[in-house]
Image (cartoon, rainbow, N blue to C red):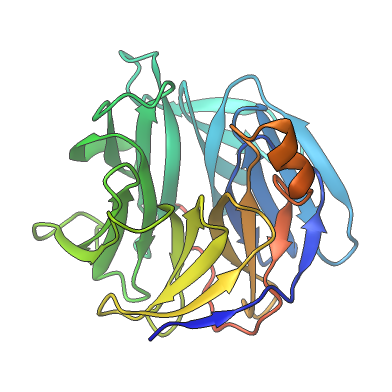
Length: 295
């Protein structure tokens, strides 16, 4: 039986993104970063000072990975770029489907080995137009093909298990992974089948105990699954389209989640003013920080 908890959190940032996505936390600066994909923006919120910045981007981008204090790797519709934190300048790093301009990047996360998994999808969300790639040392390798909306890319803390989904199919997949390289070492199996449930499996993150926290797009909840795929708790949020969670705070003991108002009509937006905001659940968690990308 799933325990259900009503929202007792708060709004961390009320800038309403069309499609808020890709949150990550930098423990060195106590800063949360996330994207407004369709708005071509990178958002920055310092939790120590509450200073908020919005960085316009020349392209749609969706995933940020720390490299070091001065550099970030970001995934965009035009490939992978290294971003200088101080200036915002982008330097091309690696191609990602440069022969498919109709596609863009979507969900992704850094593996404990320092490699990156990044998914792509059609800008019009066409069926099976995307894929998931493994990126390490500048080399890009396709690992899963024929995916419509890649999401839920995350890893067990020891790096031996990877998770992902195609949100159109709504099955959370589990695959064994080489902990030293971040490459799949087995065939994917279905861990959670929710094809017949309301909402879509969107972004996920794994806590220190191996439990999976998933934002369920269209259902207005964040679900927590145990490593065997059993949903043990559900947390409501005041936005019907939560997109991705992230552990934040100096002890990784807080949980934030991005949201979106993409596709909502005026009545729906009026009914949920938090749609597009960055929210915090207001619960204690035992999280882990996203690893840095090894360039």
